[in-house]
Amino acid sequence: MLTAMICKVCMHVTMALDLPTLMIVSVLLSLGIAVGFSLILLLLPRERVLQLWTGSLWLLALALALVSAQIWLPLRWTVVVSNTCMALANALLIHGVALHVGAKRQLRLLALGVSGYILTISWFALVRPDFDVRLHVFSLASIVCDGWIVFLLLRCPALDIRRSCRWAALAFAFHGALYVCQLVWLPVHADAAGSIRHGGMAVAGFYVILLLLILAKCFAMLLLIVERLMAGLRRMARLDGLTGLLNHHAVLGDGRLLLEQARRRCGPVTVLLCDLDHFKLINDTWGHQAGDRVLMHVAGLIEEVLAGGGHLASRYGGEEFLLVLLDCDVGQALAVAERLRDRIGGGPVSWPGASIQVTTSIGLSLADTDSTFEQIIARADAALYCSKREGRNRVSISGKGPA
Image (cartoon, rainbow, N blue to C red):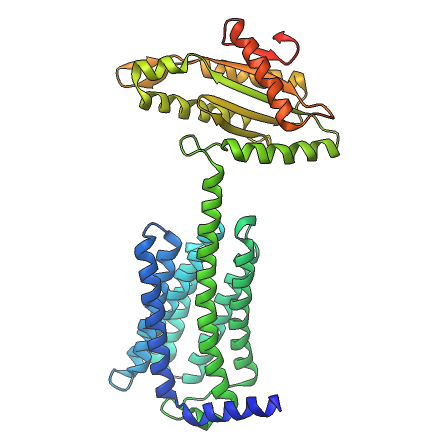
């Protein structure tokens, strides 16, 4: 019964729609989608990926409008211009996806593909007019573009946007598969002014499904944008707004997890708690903006010292920085702490009208098999105060005094 109902609906669609009507629907649909993305772009004007996709949608709408207006325009040149718009739209779409997933820029390959497509279409529109060849070239180009996008989406390295990438890849894969079906089972001839009824129910179904898949692709693009924004918000919630290091809450959560993982494989974990010496005096003497400049300078030095080790670095609060060193025993951690202390105190921080000398006191604590992460931090804090009592600008190890 369900099959009969579906067939009946398809028959009604076939009888009701002809090609001009379908083209008008396509133009209106593409214009509506382009306007919708443009409105979103007004709220997110700096989103480069959204800019590219919005431009792609407007080019698509222009291409469909030109195809619909062929009865009033020179046919051959209209074919060339509309296909050029379509090729540029696909190039912008692919480039946007590449930027979204962090893939290498592929502008040279895109330029080569667009140029080859336009030249091929122009040849079979102006020199040796052949509608069937142009249709097959267009279908093959659509399959290549969809396959390219699916490849980029499935290879996305970012875990926080991978779910939307997989759903979007599915939408683009179905769109490409539809053109594969057209090439294999639904050869359409050059009856541009005829009715879809002339091609039968299968051809009508193809065009209706194509419209639905275009909608699905646009919703997939919106899904990519939404998850990208949500991932950005989650990252911002974990980072200190001034230094870009992990904030207090994030380092506690990540530190607990890292400690559990290290204990399972019997690897050492060491905590360093750093405090900038006499930081209040810097704020009182040169102002809070100078203090902020010092904090950013120190954060940059911390990232340089810890680069490539899989360690955690955070602004723990005020002028305190908490570092969690993975696979570092006391000796290795002490070497890192001394290198960091030397880097921070090695040169003044430039500030208009002044050179601000900065030093740091550091407390070091090695994780044991029983203590919680907070208890390890507390021991590092006690070692830090030992460094301060002993004159500052030095490293102390928990339970051992200044190193």
